[in-house]
Image (cartoon, rainbow, N blue to C red; front, side, top):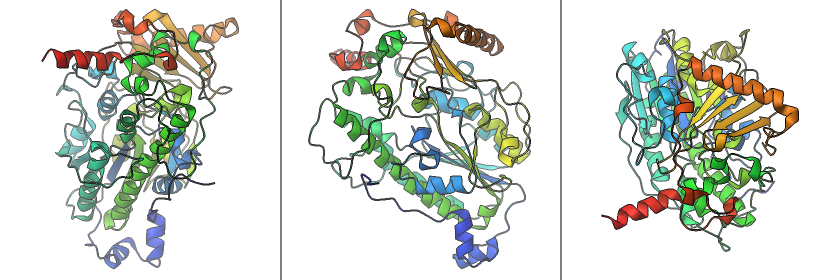
Length: 514
């Protein structure tokens, strides 16, 4: 199949690197590579690589035929990847505060990106992944993106830097792309250096988040964008035929989300440009993942290091005519890649489809892997039995997601319950509900909540949400909705949007008053 850009560099996998060394031991192979050989620490190292805004469906190892992700795919080929893995909030800061603490956003208090809806700093009384590992004698360090509201406490934070990049006209870059090479380079230097203690290192890459800035560069219909090669096709769930049956925050997402407002008048070709851009920024991230893994596997530490790769949330990827992420809990924004490879991982290239996985599971899984006590009161579950290939017993009944607001200009509290077969969402505004049968409708094209034949399934998921709220002390039904009527006034349909979005209108007003 023709691609819309040349393939990225594929770096050797761990297995391939040492096979190329002629079957030598790890230490000898490292010496052959010109690296300082040292005995790996007895306790395991852990390298966490995070991509910002990467939908699971966009990764080649998960079946995307248009993706150019050979290095992520190589990692998956040498380890296990979880299929039904979900973020707990499809927004950067709430998601990150959540997975670093193992707590849901309503527990951390970090439920927005800030600005007009300030968030607290994670309290010192709340354990964090970095603090737990640091106290256990690990060298803990974070390279790249932070945006964590203090949830990276316990890590040494290496400040992001920007480098100049040459970019084709079709793929403009911003600080997202300019920060990633420096973060990768510093992580490479760390991995190649001497280590007196086991380490927990994080390489937090921004891309493909640069797609948000790309939308801002391409507001409205554009015809002559110099995109090389064949354009990716639109997804099967591009159209949203039953918009009137969906909750008000979904019907008027263009009014609360400036990126969708900027894309409101796009043609179908423009959406295909968007997909081509998204794959391009993802390819940039994959190349850096390869450089980081190459550095790790060229050292003695590589033999004793678990590598974990995941994303904080996904991207709409033109599903339901949406771009980037906001408000919705659809599969593209909520379902993320989750890959583990290294010592103790059972099997190679294994796709684990049984358990429903939440990013809340990260902290207990890594603690369990390293033999550390898991902090009490967490909702997540250790995935180590599935990682090892053991008999894990009973899987969680559901995973949960939360939404409050992005910047605070429109506040549309929502909750998601994803069970084995169904996904149920509830929004306070207008008592909006969605129910999707993901077994027969993986694209979430048909909202079953209004249909009488699914009344029993709907009632069961309502009860499950109530149980979840009670179990986690979630005050969802007492939260406030903030939705100015002027942002609910045009005919539903993103293509019918006129004027600015609520955030842009507020920012414009603030600028006038300065």
